[in-house]
Length: 344
Image (cartoon, rainbow, N blue to C red; front, side, top):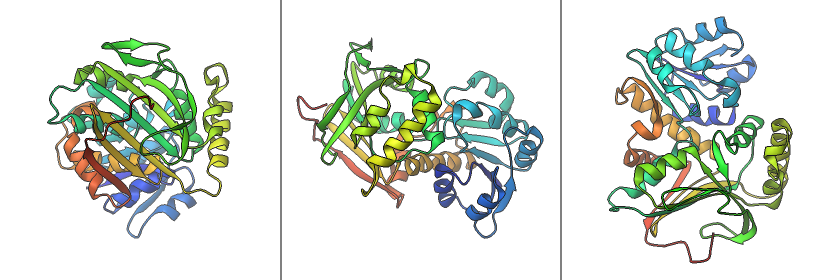
């Protein structure tokens, strides 16, 4: 079986290549960097998403194509269409905004797994894993973040994720519905399971809204956490500024916040007092971990044909087991340690 990875030398691509068995077909615009990423036996290919013929040649002969290229708002369904037309299965670490019906029609008997990353992806699967065997859950509080670095593509995706198309800033899920303006950003606050004081930004993504409806939750609070004051400030007024400029400010702010410090990224979920924490050196490792699981599930025929979000077709318990077995990921088992009253 031939697996192709596009965007192989980016932060997510490199982390994914480490997790997939070879030989792989690796692609990117800079052939030298592709070759530096390749292991013995891997095939290095120059591919430019703006050149349809090169992209088609890359996908031809692949059984699975995994897209790690970004920013996703620019890539759109370019790689997905090329892969499916070539007769390959498809995995995308982003892609939740793509037209699922259109891709399903193109897929035929092939599978396309979208949103197979950290957010979206693990951000919906891990609460589902926590909810298994918990009866009827009522309230979820999530904190996602830490001291992480931003690549330019990741910064652009993050800025896009805060827009009205993907999320509602400052909103919460209360009384089984979206309440706009329910929460406010906070600086220098103490959060359980985070070292020192951090900044937190509340928002409600479309994925989280779907999760709340699926689990029948009455209340959800979702906070992006930044272990540094510059990063949150860089997002101030993001909706009124040019996305490229905000992304550049975010990239720089995260780098300055991280000077001389050890990076980390973690997802902390409190579901009615049952707590699950998943941590890695950065968010890219967590994204790659889920993408690797999705790729394995597709390869073994456990994903039905058509286009699906990862959270809808991957087994939450199986995903959690894979994270426990991943040497780059730390999982703290669910416990009865609630978020303290009065703490974000």
